[in-house]
Each structure stands twice: as structure tokens, then as C-alpha cells.
Length: 98
Image 1 (spheres, one colour):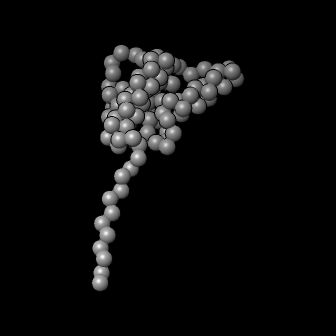
Image 2 (spheres, one colour; image 1 turned 180 degrees about the vertical axis):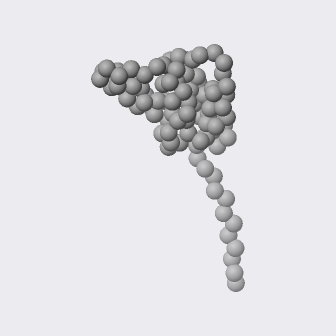
Image 3 (cartoon, helix red, strand yellow; image 1 turned 30 degrees about the horizontal axis):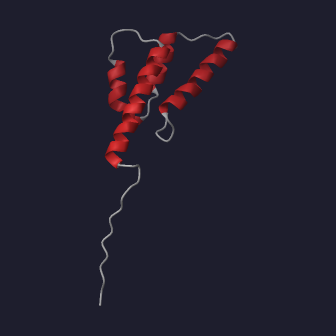
């Protein structure tokens, strides 16, 4: 996965691949699907990925998607708080010679 697209949109693309495989008669174990999605999380999700990998209860793909959606919403809200209205403010120092 990449940081330039939302995680949910990328997970939806992966789900389409899973459905195409199922349509061809090749099914994948749901635990494998969940593990594959977790493994492919982008680098910015390192801590959340570690949290998910260390959960002891089995998780469904739907359950994972709910957790990812919540986490993504939290990260977006945090970015808005950190960066204000989304605009980056640049400070420039001007030095005049003469």
C-alpha cells in the first residue's frame, strides 16, 4: 500500500481481487486475507500494524475494515488539528542588502 491513497480505498481494491479469485473458484482463508491486508499497510501505519499483529483473538475481514476506517478517520482528524485548516504556512525571512 502507499500513503498517497486512503487505506480504505486500497483495501477495497484488494477485496475486489479476493472476489475475482472466488469467482474463479479459488477461495482464500479469511485469516490469510486479514493477515495479507495487515502486512500491506503503509509505513505510516507501523504502530497500528504492530497492534493488529499482536491481537490474540481472530479477526474477520469486516472487523479489520471497521478498525482501519476508525484509525484512518482518527489520523485524518489528527492531521487537521496539527496542520490547522490543511494549509501549510510558510515563513520567509527577507534580507535586503544595500
